[in-house]
Image (cartoon, rainbow, N blue to C red; front, top):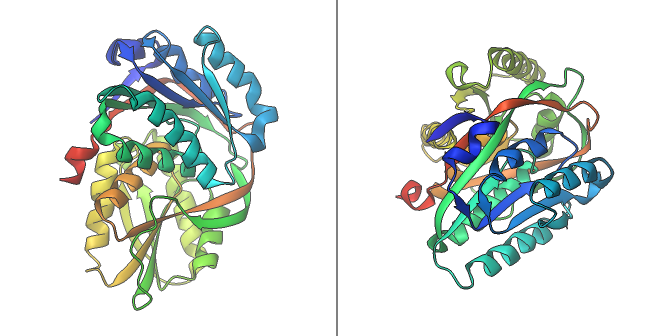
Length: 320
């Protein structure tokens, strides 16, 4: 259900007419990439969101995206420290878009939304699924990621709105880390939750963005495991297909026979993050958590690739 295509050719495989396009402008130049392709379609309403915390770094990209849509996009500042504000902002737009229509076409550029905001957006798509005819997700690959650091510190830990799970005080806690390159962030989550069982998931070699990223991910996962000093569980998931990711996560959780409360921390790319969201939509026992970083490496976070992934979001079929 995932297709890779060049940014320049993106408009050719998206619906020719798009009712609602949602994107996030961040400090990464990568946040502009997908809009170059999407803007070749007939976009009736383009929405540009940006995080208030990084407005100083993001506004140049906000203006660059808006220019692609002839300065007609709606620009919204998100308070990413307030999940309810984020959810309300998304709901307001879907309410307007579906007010006089029962089958809208939605395209979401997932590239640089925060993981929490992206998962909240997925939950809103799920809420309005009966009024959405076509929903597509676009994700621009990174050609390079910073070798220094991506994020530092954690200022808050919280379950993600819409993915609270069904938690029982009578069951032990199984914490699943879908690891990326942020060892400190992952370790802080473990310290906060003090789980009875820890599992580390890494992107499967055959479904990784690149061999370099795969090897780096393995290195970071081993470094993280060495900090625990105890045996941990392991599994693999796809970094290119959210549905394969969701299926792998559910299968791994099911192998523990429901004897645990399950908390999942998605810490890899946005496609696997969507996969975690799909798993939690299908399995209501799963809780998703978010560790809010103290700081991002806004200067050298990533270098955009010329290719992107396109995914069909088919919530109704997935739930069956």
